[in-house]
Amino acid sequence: MTAPAEETFALVESPVQLLNVLEWAYRGGTVTPCTVIVLPPLDPMSRGQLRRMAELARGEGLAVRWEEARGGALDTLRRLYAPMRAARRIIVGDPFSRWMQLLLALTRAPEVVVVDDGTATMEFVGQLARGERFVRWHRSGRGRGGARALVFAPVSGAARRRLTPNTDRDIEVFSSMPVTPPPGVRVTRCEFAWTRARFGPPRVGRGTDLVGTSLVETGVVDQARYLDAVRLLARTHGATRYFAHRRESAAKLHEIHKETGLEIVRPDLPLELIARRGPIGHTVVSFPSTVVHTLPLALAGTGVQVAVINIDATWLTAHASPRAHGFLTSVAGAAQREKGARAVQLPIASPAA
Image 1 (cartoon, rainbow, N blue to C red):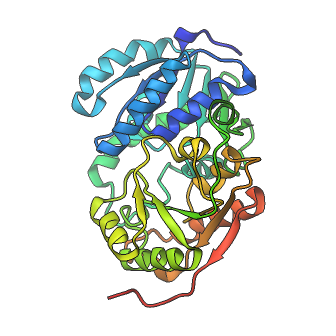
Image 2 (image 1 turned 45 degrees about the vertical axis):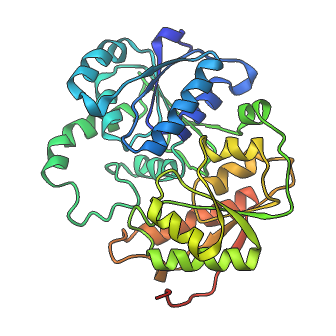
């Protein structure tokens, strides 16, 4: 099936989602026109990266609409109701998002494409295959959701049905993650071909770069354990830079700089593009996250080695989901098996005082 530009709409909430929409639109070397609807979150770093990505998308020929959904929900729904009903193809950046589930419930599009929102795609495909309700992997389920989740349940159920293939609906997952789809769901590999064609190759230095995550901010990993790990990595690998995740807190980053002397880099674009533009270290060490799957693709042919840290269960907080350690272990293991990432095992130590 094909759909004209005015009938293809992409819903994105993060810079990584918009990057993957660009990769989808330019797959195979030719552009598929679409209109990108940006539903920006409230945090300043994500908004800043999204604005830069929106500029890139416009420069590459895609139409972009910026919708402040969180500042006027009813007005946003009124503006988007007609496009959602008329759409022939919907591209979804985050099937766990309540905003996207609400808009999915409105559409009757015969084609739905899910592009990567990082490692969450792995959990989404697994839950879809098992027929489970959509819950983010780091949510513990203890005391979360409550009455609001109950009220939203019919909308979430309708969105799940829109993401279930049938004779009237084609479902595609466009992903660089290792996923095993349920019957009827088509997986197309994202190889970051647009990124490699558009940027670089980078200048590769002799040092090591560390990549941060928001595992502390999401309540999964204990901050003292995390800081211990960063200190150890900086010392043993001779790292000089720390690429911060857009959701990492300023207080934590200040502590990292004070304790390690690492230069804190706040990227203004997704790390795949920053790394491809360079300069980048000859080794990039990351906690289990999206980049251990995407950077080997974006940096293919450059000689850069990506390494992933194995997280011990003792690092997790008491509030972490029971699924958290298993999920993080699977992310790291899959990156080693399928993307050639090197494993980094840190000694288990008591957190610093």
